[in-house]
Amino acid sequence: MKLTLKVWRQKSANDKGKIETYPIDNISEHMSFLEMMDVLNEQLITEGKIPVSFDHDCREGICGMCSMHINGEPHGPDRGVATCQLHMRKFKDGDTIYIEPFRAKGFPIIKDLVVDRSAFDRIQHAGGFVSVNTSGNTQDANALPIPKADADTAFDSATCIGCGACVAACKNASAMLFVSAKVSQFSLLPQGKVEAKRRVLHMVEQMDKEGFGNCTNTGACEVECPKGISLENIARMNREYLKASVSSSK
Amino acid sequence: MSKSGPLSSSIARKMAMALSAFFLMFFLLQHLTINMTSVIDGDTFNDLSQFMGTNFLVQYILQPVLLLGVVFHFVIGFVLELKNRSARDVRYVKYKGAASATWMSRNMILTGLVILAFMGLHFYDFWIPELKTKFIDGDWSGMVAGEEGYRYLTELKHKFENPVRVGIYVVSFILLGLHLAHGFNSAFQSMGANNKYTKGLKKFGIAFSVLIPLGFIFIALFHHFNH
Ligand code: HEM
Ligand code: SF4
Ligand code: FES
Image 1 (cartoon, protein in one colour):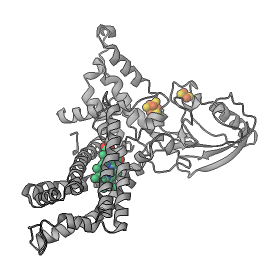
Image 2: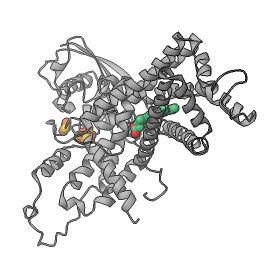
Image 3: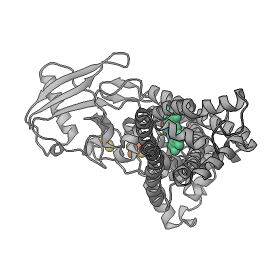
Image 4: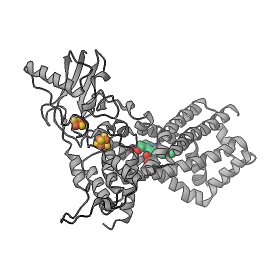
């Protein structure tokens, strides 16, 4: 395949940045998108130019590092996959492909396509955990009976890989889908109930502080999420938030 | 609510939006019901109009609450829009919004602004003249000298003679329909209701967003062609 790539290049956080055009040839449809990017970078290095910086790690859809906005959609045109699992067979010979970083005030650009998603870490630190006394005589997790349906729903929420595609897709750059998945994965389980109130209040407070937008319920996040995290999580978080707000003594 | 004031969090703002919207949707239903009587039975319409226009509870409690509700809704609407815009300070070169979300959900501010402009016209047409008659001229009789019965139906028919006004009404109600096509279910989702009833409620929401505006459009056209 022969393609025209329009790639966002930005030297540093303070650089203005712009789209650069790179023609590329001999791309196999069996390549993954990131392999195609590797080919581009080899080409740039051969030409004595600076290769494009982009995030990636596992390349099998589990770490949440890859983060490109491809032809106007996070993780590209395919559904239920991260950029690393996107294949070139989704494109046609002669296509022009726009490749941009995830854009949000909460995700400042570090270089080219690499953005700083540590806002998500700070939201997690604000309450996305269960405090356990690890003194050596911890109770066996299986000693607590948990309804299968609850366990399954919690597990579905826990599959969120924290990639940030929900923020990137949202017209408001809202992080509600991510935060609601992280609230839900605990709030559905007995171990998570103890700290449920302060968890949801603190995580939402941190989310707002990071400068993410409000939710308009457009559902773009759910469509673009590589893990199929659903809007039910957002409704659950809103319920939890309302409950915690009216009953919290703080 | 949490630490600093009830509207300081994004979720609280959305819930305020949803609650004011529920109130406005209920109001629309009530408004349509009364207006519908104007095509069914003119006397009923006149009687209801006189009641709504002179009843103490309606005039001095419900009407101010409605006005506050509308202002509250669009002011928070503007606040949300501004905050949401600033949450993406640098725009994408290519952004395919239509790939993942409906036009209605992405353009609530646009449809909302059209409704707001329409309300300006609507106030000019009906509300301000009503205020003038009642509070400036001090005439609470609902009648016009030399004419039989209440004046409301005659005034209504007179307003809808002008095809331009009827056209504006029709277009505005179509945009209200688009606002509600997303808004109805969005309000439930904002309040945390997403459950086994959601599928059915979505269908009901679409029916609501089609039928309510269609009712108002029908009334405007009916009086335009029957005067
Ligand atoms: C009779 C009049 C109106 C009705 C029945 C109505 C109804 C609704 C409903 C049901 C929602 C969804 C609430 C939610 O998502 O929680 C909504 C949202 C919205 N409305 Fe209205 N509305 C009306 C007038 C207006 C006006 C005059 C504006 C002026 C700008 C406006 C602007 C908005 C905006 C911007 C949103 C989306 C807020 C967001 O989620 O980001 N609406 N409306
Ligand atoms: S909710 Fe989905 S899109 Fe958002 S961070 Fe988690 S996996 Fe990524
Ligand atoms: S590189 Fe790990 S999810 Fe894509």
